[in-house]
Image (tube, rainbow, N blue to C red):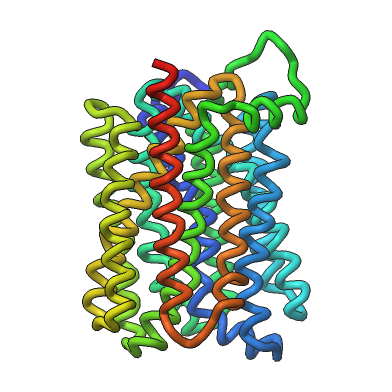
Length: 395
């Protein structure tokens, strides 16, 4: 790249990185309104189409395991280009699927290859921001949150033509990001270790690192709550409380807006307070909101009480997640890609279990949803109390 293009790319780096990460949320959320039409097209039942979401999360988790350590050895820019190109090709291939089995297999491949592009982003941010990694991650997350806010609405509009149009639109988006990355994404080199570690050794270093253990576990638990929300909230709002599709889109967007506000607040305060204190603030808010949600279920309160509980709960989950991510990354200067892979694999792996767990305990009420939101939050509180005890012992 020329010197001029490098300067431009650094000026656009955060929006571009956010656009790269947004590929997966768009691929997850845009086709949700089209699930009934896809089921009808393939003459299959809805649960099989819904399983394509869990398969996508599984494929993404497996991809992170493969490409994460590669991000610590090879060109991060090249991995972005490979991931985006692979995403474009598999997304277009989805429109030619002849049956639900092909569709599900292609969704796995789509998620697997796209992870090559997204796994490098936290490492790039860490090198650009250093001790202010949480601030950089919050900026990127805040911009990226626009994707899940608008994705279901875009998907609904595209369904006027056909469900295939959703994937044509996804391929077009990825193509534009591919072109922008080719011209403007600088090749931020990974920090080279004096020792050439094998992939297995890199994973061993991450998993055996005690300082990051409770933060990693907190990320996993928060991810279970987050994906439980994504999976169950259509049932809770549309079926249990019988809101209209328009009201559901508004309520869904409201919670995404809450996530964006939380990230904005984090960018304003994290430089002064530090990631650890911001994480503790998020935990405190999440415990209050989760307890409020539990009370709403126990006393069979109205939809408004659920909305007023879920909004701050989702905001607090995002605050916990972004600061825990930053704290984990700060522990692994030479293994950012591997740490991101472990982080993402655990996150999306547990996310893939949310659907089956909700289905297993389905009883037609909001109880499974409430428990899968509340229990992880209380467990995160325990994790961070143990983390705090460990930090004090070291000091």
